[in-house]
Length: 249
Ligand SMILES: [Zn+2]
Image (cartoon, rainbow, N blue to C red; front, side):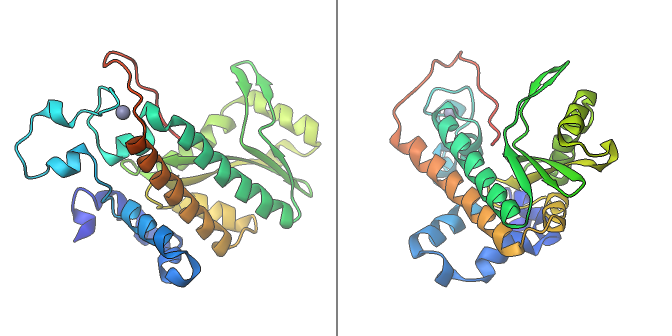
C-alpha cells in the first residue's frame, strides 16, 4: 500500500536490496530508541512540513512555499535535499558516509586516498575516494540523492562522470596499474535510506560487509533527519528571486 502512495513511491526500489531494511530487521536494540524513531519517520516521510500539514486543508500554493524563501514548495525532499538552510548538513552527511567507507576499506587492506585532486582538461576533479589493492584501483564517489528517479541510473551517472573523462587515466600513472584495472563506482543511497542495488553490489564485492553498509543507511537517515530539524530551528531566509542550489550529498 505504502509503495503505491505518493510518499511510498520512493521506496519502490527497496525490494531490490534487503540492505535498505537491514537496520529495521536487526531491531531497535542496536539503535538508541529516539534515533530509531527518527530513522523510521525519515524513511516513511512523515516529517511535518508546510505541504504535509496543509494536506486536506484548503491552502493556496503560496502558503506551502518554502519558509526559508526558496521558490520551491516546502516538501520534506526540498527541505532535506535542496534548501539553502540545510546545505551544511548535506555536506556533513556526505563526508560522514565517505569516512565510514574509507575506514572499512582500509581495514580490508586497501590503500585509500581521500579527495585527491586530479587535474583534467575539463577542470580539476576530486573523487571522494581512490582505493588501491594489489593491481586494482577503484574510484568511488558517494551521493545521497532524491529517490524520485532510478537509483541505479543515479549510480550509473556518477560512474560515467569519471569513466568518460579520459584524463582520469592520469590516476593510472600515479598508481602504476593497468588502465583496464581502474574501475569506477559509487555509494548511492536515497535520503530516505534506500540503496542502489548496483552500488551496493560493487561495494560488497570490494569486501565491505552488509553490516557496515547498513550503518551507512542509518547514517544517511540520521543526516536527513538532522537536516530537517535544523531547517525548523533556522530563521535564515533568502529572497524569493535568489537561485536555488542543487543539493546532492
Ligand atoms: Zn528552501
